Image (cartoon, rainbow, N blue to C red):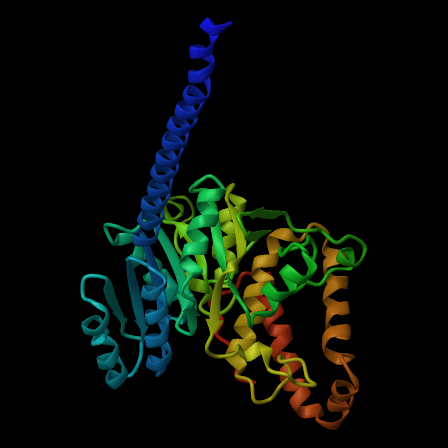
Length: 378
């Protein structure tokens, strides 16, 4: 019995030594893993190039966006000056002196080529930068929050760091994104739908897939707006650049739909927040549907309708159901939207005629894929 005491005495010390050694190794492994993740995160952030398009005289907005971009950790940015006046162009040309000539590139277009032409040039220039791996597409009024890019990096890494995965930042003031996370209803184009309206959606509501991990939440989408869209530059080799023929409106949907149709995935990341410094023209609160508002520009109403109809063409499987959806959309969303809309049609028949003529011509152009006919002056 006395002979066993020495072994019993050293048993707890041996266990304590093994536990201490294990804890030490575990802590070193945790530190090593943390360091690796941090290096990977910095690589993704530094490999991100923001692609921004500006026009008119929006330099004050643009400066705030660039501050947000570099404050969020992006390695570089490209700004396309989409045909601004000479005085504005000169001010834009001086921005690299503020933010660094090594990380900010200015591309000057002699005329305004619309959002399609502008982002065609911006994405192309961003991809041409040697260190670019991911491109973060932003409007000149989408100011990133400090942790917005980090959230994209973490979500992308959590999903497997696969180039097939594309993400979109969350714009707090954009109805599409608020509705997506509130209802979890899949953001995509239903077959035979017109401007997202379809009788089928009343009967069948497709839910979006949800990805959650480490406090992050992402919902899958079929397409995305430009503002906040983050993707690996290898996609350009697969799907090409934005279609310049679309000129204005829904060219972003056309571009991102090509990704999902080619096997990619798009996820909206709720943790990657962008602040819209200016509200969209379509968000204006009004009794009238924005297509009918007389103060709205004919051209952008025409392009908006023509391009959306053009994009939805490939989803039309039954012409009769599609035409029925068009009629129901016009009746429920425009004519009988509310009492004021009904009265407006009787009170201003001449103005209403001009707008309806424009709408019908835009629908016809979209169905025919007519990009040659300019917006009519009716």
